[in-house]
Length: 352
Image (cartoon, rainbow, N blue to C red; front, side, top):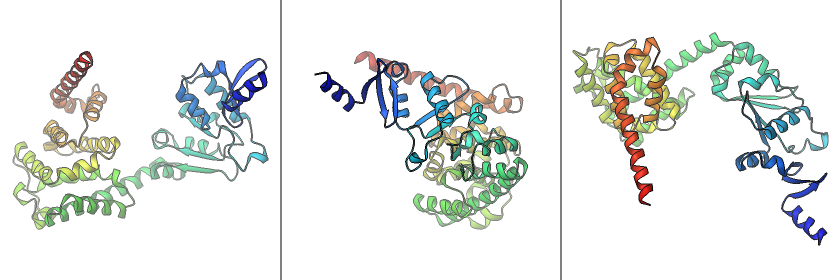
């Protein structure tokens, strides 16, 4: 009977070692039942798939133990043809310099972390690799920062952004003049971005800036006139005229704007940040900032979470105080709508 029970437990990944129940998460990786109770199911699934992590604070004891154990253990040659039980280590900024192990042969630097590193930090990061290792950078900007230095990377990025902006504006003008349907409009902008080595996520910011610049210099009645779109330089008489021009453009392509803005929240954030920078260069953009944000919100291009997050980050910053004040009434309205939705959800739950 005992042998039969042990056989059944083995099939279920259970065993006993040193008087303690053991759970097999994967081949070669077992933990005690006591350790399993200290973490949630998602963590156990993560570990069973060979992933563990380290950060400044907050990781569970089991996760920390397996992370450190992996760093100290170099797989035997017999295992080189297959992955060891723990084969993926995830670290935050605080743990980069502790990741030094002969078993680490591939490191991947994510973009948001890479932006925090200095040139010297990048060199230290690459120093985590042993001979013949591979470093994967998920953005060209960070790769340049690691090889050329931050200044050269910033200059190259600024030049490329300007080229992308010019390509997008040219494609935008052609599409407006030709009266292209949304699908062809989107396709044209994608081709322009691809020609500059960029993807669909990168289009939202230059698209919005192009719309703002056209609104600053082209009369609203000439938004389909190729010559005017390319050459006109007619200043707005007042803020109302600027808004009419922008609304004319937006009305001509709401689906196109929504498509590129909603591909990713970072696309919306980049576009909003780009518009903020435009506010410091062009008075009409600054004085109508709240209206422009609402226009984009109304066509489902800007998500309320992005707007609220920007406003929250802008509060207390002297250079953004004026824009944050202009947007305050709209932000309060969004928050009230959010509270009303929450109340409706609570009422529905009560009825159930």
